[in-house]
Amino acid sequence: MIGIQKLHREPLSDELQALLFVLRIDREAPDRDRIRGKLSSIDWNQFLELVRHHRVVPWVHTRLQPFPELIPADIRKELHADYRANAFGMLQLAGEMERVGANLDRAGVPCLMLKGPILAETLYGDLSLRTSRDLDLLVPVDAVERAAEQLARMGYEANDSVHRILNDWKWKLHHLSFRHPVKKVLVELHWRFMPASDKEPTFDELWRRKRKSGMYRQPIYYLGAHDLFMHLTLHGMKHGWFRLRWLQDLDLMLRRHPPTDETIRHLRKYRCLAAAGQAVILLERLLGTPLNPESHRLSASRHARVLAEKALVFIRTKEEWAVRLPPRQARRFKRYLFSTKTFVQKGKYVLGKLYPSSWDAAALPLPKPLRFLYFPLRPFIWFWRQMRQEAGAGN
Image (cartoon, rainbow, N blue to C red):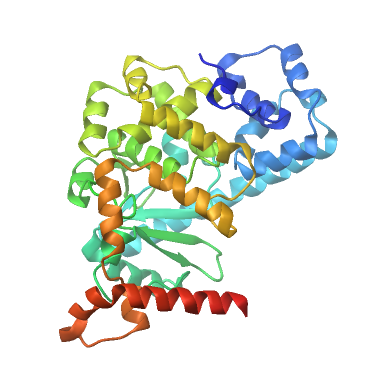
């Protein structure tokens, strides 16, 4: 296995190396003296901060529980409190997942659960061993409006102002966000895996390959194995893998079900080989995930190696990358996202910038027969919107 430092020249902090070690405890079965040596020189407050940032509290708590004498009492107490709070929260979230699924089913909206409790059940076998703060569900694009109406009837409120005047939102975006003001549950309503992607499986294809959970009174459907692997790699890549929890998910998946020739054909069909290769490289070098021959084929790509090195920059920090960033960091992350695209995807992305958006229609409303004017007016409306935003930020 190639060392972490050969993936990136800058060293990882002692606390991050300790966290990576703890995440591997059950796989490598190290003795107590080795664990003591790894944890003896770290700043425990920094370590706890990293555990929370990467959202791996339950896994770390469980792996360190047999070694109470190695952990300061106050840190042990906080880890246990976080673990209990997460277990309760995951039970609540699982109940809400059933409720949302049942309401959509009654409205005739087919729904696939993407992550959250269903992923905890599928990969961890225990709700309490994974953290999740929201529900991610996928519906057909032509059912988005009906699904949004059902969520509104359940008390959910739109979490952001997304204009859906022109049809551009269907391919430029990939989800809408809703929040319940009382339950504090966030629901992300997806109709595709990635924004502005050029090739994805249709909902009908995903639905034909779906799996069904037997753990709930309400039928809960989720992605088939190849589709789930593809979705998890795309999701991690989109966020720069800045949380180790996403790698932890894939580590568990690949140890039980390593990629096969069929997996590679599936990824190639949807142009996701680089995303999977990036994930596999990070898994081997950070979590020690064993690679089978098919995994090695995925990691051999130069594009995948470049993307893995770029992602390590995001993993090393405690920034909420891809969430809310200062302008300089936002530009850096946008450059990374652009580098994840294939040549064809980059071309379509650039052309998409010339296509009128619903934001243009909101800024300059035109009657439907005149909406063709948005094409020649697009540069001027865009410039006007940018000026308004800068003026608003200045105030």
